[in-house]
Image (cartoon, rainbow, N blue to C red):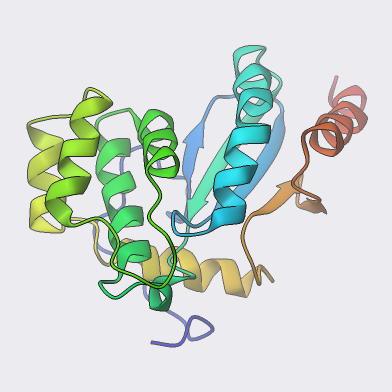
Length: 193
């Protein structure tokens, strides 16, 4: 299905999803930060490496609520639909309360574009390194969230997202660079007190 087409909301969305069901909510700070990512995207891996610690700090300080939207934007860039399968597996990690830890593991083990991505079994093994077993493994093997990534991607397109990583602070686009994100959050915070 073309990502601009409307994809119906899946019957099951991951635990911790926002009201729209298209993102995983982490934290409960006053400033909303949306991060649109694709686990096949090299720039997203770079973004996670450079901005991940900042986001973790802003979350720990209670400044932001981060909503991660794992898209399947680059699904055609692998021979086995890795982007969608990795995003679905991240939904399984969210069910177990370990979305961020698993996202870091996925980016640390990102396969190159154009070839096969990790297999489902390799996604399960990767989860075990992040402390995910049992229900997570079953969720990945059964493809419990396979219909979720196309929905997330469709919703992102409806919101005007055309590439990854895309960062929005209170709905306004911000370049995915740590200092620019920090500044955007700081500008919004005084207006929220």
